[in-house]
Image: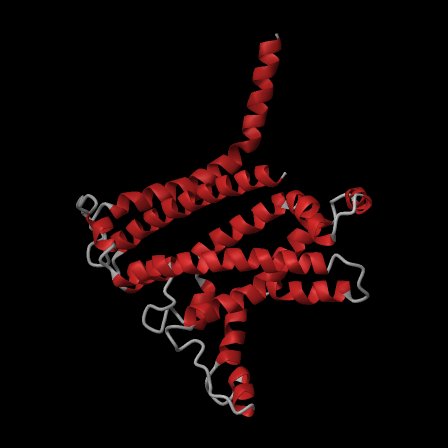
Length: 297
């Protein structure tokens, strides 16, 4: 009798999750398996039927494609810089704005506001600000000070870092909000006890605040890393991967290989590799952050 009740309960729970499971299988698992299938064929805009199996030829040719190689390299650089600086700056802002300041609510809103807008809007805004033409406000200010113009988005050595700057401006406020929520959950008694023990503000940060901030640090760091690896829209709005391949990312190279050039099988191969790269980096990152959390607690 008990087993029948348990079985009925499991069946009822299974029926409740069935719609979400079907949605996941249809829109996540099936497209990925299809992408893997097409990656080992000769599928292209000139051959969309009667596909032939070509093995791992598309995977090998991917590493001979300058655009795809540049995309992987730039995505890793972009994601690493975004993860480090977004986490660090967001944490600093959160600690500063957790103090009893008269204008802290206004400042919180100001820093968070850019995160509300679409990256495409942010891209068009910064394209205007960084332009080398007469209406570019930043270069206008530089020339007013007697300095030379800087080609932020047209210089291959500066373009990627200029894009990173715009995204730090947009998303640091979001990280700040996550950290603030965690900070405000820390019991004040711990700081009072640390004061009684004579701990300095710096020691309180390392021994009390940072260990208890580990969950939010994990969230911000991992989401920043994943978001950085799959960045697409801000690149499209600012540089479209240029100049040359200086700001090409995995996603922009994938889109151009697949849809602009019509090599669907090569694009699928890069998508499969991208999936496993993100999974590997995320797994390693979670383990490193977990060990760091255990060490500081």
